[in-house]
Structures are given as structure tokens and as C-alpha cells.
Image 1 (cartoon, one colour):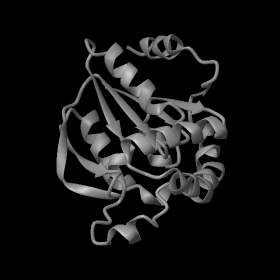
Image 2 (cartoon, rainbow, N blue to C red; image 1 turned 180 degrees about the vertical axis):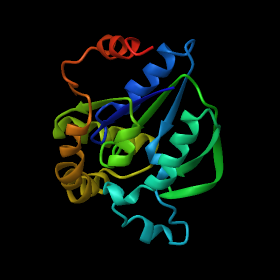
Image 3 (cartoon, helix red, strand yellow; image 1 turned 30 degrees about the vertical axis):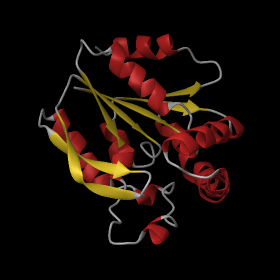
Length: 198
């Protein structure tokens, strides 16, 4: 069982790379797990209060549950991954059953911020991309997919995303095996590295 970590700042390309890897290694057997699914449950709060939570801080993640589930997958035990709604900032009551596969792709903002989680990852990629490009991508995504206003997106980015990126996410790149410049990297290069482990 090979656990590959795909980390980096918001809108750095994590989902795009992870989805490509799932397509490329479909015949080998691959499953994708999102660390975003493991945001702590704040369903007891109203939407206004949930909107004020700093989801870019590593403390927003339920690392204990994430680590437990990944360990189970590595033991060939299927798990129930939480389902998180970005629109409502809330963990839903339903869960997603994840069946163990030869390759596990773990994708997320905070995956290199927790030592116990880092120790579980067999090989980690940190996707490095400049702040301006990430903000433009985030605006495009959040307006289309999450129903946010541009004003709201910029405010959260300036007040939460970028400060947390500088304090936690970017320094955590040192826990990855490979830091990739997303302005230059070729997807085939990532694929070749993973192929070496199979």
C-alpha cells in the first residue's frame, strides 16, 4: 500500500494533480482521500459563526480521525470518509465509503503540518505556486463552485489564507520529499516518480 501526499497552498493545483493521478493509475488500483473532508465538525454553530472559523489553520483539521482512517486503509480495512460541504462550512451526516487500493492519494492543504501524518506518507509532493496566481484561481473556483462573492473571497484570502500559508503551509514544504515549481513542472515527471515505487 503506497500513500502519496499532494500538498500545497490554496489553488496551487492539488486537486488537478490528484485527479490526473487517479486516472493514470486506475488499472493499478488507486483511491483519493481529501484532508478537507476531515475539517472538525462545527454543525452545532450557525452559518454566520461557522463562516468566521479560520479553516486555513492546521487546528481546523481532525488529524486524529484522518490518521486513524489512513492507518486502516493501509491495513486493508475500508473506511467511512466524512463528507464536508464548502458552501455551508459544515460536515454532513452522510459519509463516503473508501475501499483500500494499492495506491492512496492524500490531497490537502495541511497534510505536511502534522508529524504523525507526515510519517504515514510514503512520498510527498509540495506544489509551489505564487500568491497572485493562487488568488486568481481561488476567485475563479469559489465564485463558480461555492457561490462566494469576490469581496468575500479576497477578504478571507488576505485575512486568513495568506497569513496561514506563510506561517504554516509554506514552511511545511520541508516535510515533503519533493517541492515542485508549478509554473515549470511537467505532470509526467510526477507520474514517473510514483512509478518507481510500484
